[in-house]
Length: 157
Length: 483
Image (cartoon, rainbow over all chains, first blue to last red; front, side, top):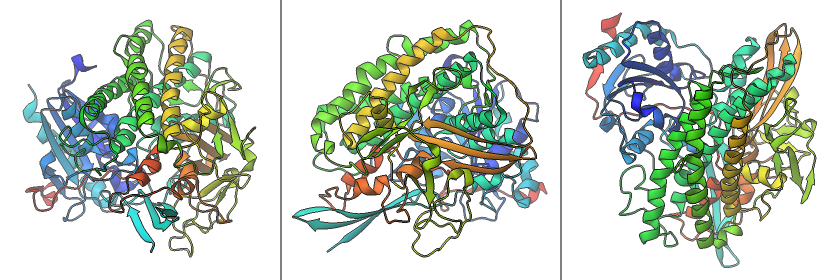
């Protein structure tokens, strides 16, 4: 629980049933094959929204890997911060509409937000039912893993 | 003159619930005269399962939904148990009840405070940060000191949600998707330390049960007292249905919340053979009126007369509402009425009922006892797994041929509640609940949201892309460098 929080969290989110939408989770799976220090925790967040509230809370560094809608070629990896995101939607119809941005806002309400949040967004090529990544993203998977390691390693103590 | 209001959350690129209502003044009251509920994304997940190892189903189906993965894992495990002839030992059954119970508690608390209560509270000046600052503000909303108290409880509710998540993870392991839910039971072991951690989160002072009893239920009752008109709004079809949940014995014959239905004002038994799915108004070319055991999912986007990716499940051809009110009504725990407020109240009382039962289940666990019974995958079999997600009845149907999945069908609670019209032109439960709802201000149709939210809809398809602002992001890590 909170007392024994691993300081660095790498959180992959997305729906693996929709091919490239699941890239965040696929990066976590690939990172699982690497030797990582104890201070890094990998979490496959799936498509969870508010379920991530506890997982995000009380961390030093959170690196979020997710698919990102962006005007760039498929496979491009972008680095940005929470303040670069478009504001959350105004009308929610269901708890499904509760996304990572809102869940991060909740950690602020609870006064336990992660100290630093880095988003790594990957532009998807194919979003349709299916478990496999597109060839473009599959080929670049090792690169994405390297990018996550590059972002996390400066914070190792 | 009729006006059409579309409520369509557009942040995500696709895949959400869209509600369209037509409002007109009838008998001097401006009200909803027609409603259309659409699921805007093809749920092709069932096709992904074809020809796969049946044991993949609990893992894959947990990914269908970002809000109720536990319930899908449970339904899928039960489906395979029926097909395999596996019976979980008592410990396994109880552990699953505890994991699902934790999920019910966190979902219900979040529903009330995040989705429902904010429709009734003017948070201006109290909670001005995004995403809470931009909702509708109507004159009937609670404001002032009471609003401040309720917002304080909202923050407290988020804290409880964290605790309920920690509690579920004790036996569910890596939540949100629980790898420990498997056909035959649960793969987590029972230790006295785990039982004690679980019990503390549930029963210690100012923990979950305390919050339910002293904050959640009193808040729901206070709101019910302030908005009595919502006891008359949003009744809907009036038929209720529950598959039942929380098995109290090994064959599931006795459940904490019983199976049954309330059709045409009469309590009756449920026979799954009477469930069919119509597609006249859904984007499918597969035949209409099939039982899910024979169900097919062939997409036909643009089909004339269709307006949703959701099929229309019916029992004996009739629309039925599912959810906490249906469960509590059928079980005899709550029969005050069927309305917006009754849905909120039944959900709160159900939270208490489940949490109280969990305290007893902890006492039934046997430390070190077996939690799992293994059966080989049969070469050919069929199975039905019926359970409940927090938001209502959830069923999975499987056919196994040559030890592979040859058919997989899922009927989610939101398919029951948010279904479109069926072949006979009968609206779905949410559509029926919306028709007749008064709307005071066309620019702020809060009444419509209150009705929709009371059902706790959850469309079984999540697309969780983030949307960075094209103008703001400066760091693009060039992909070519890595190749």
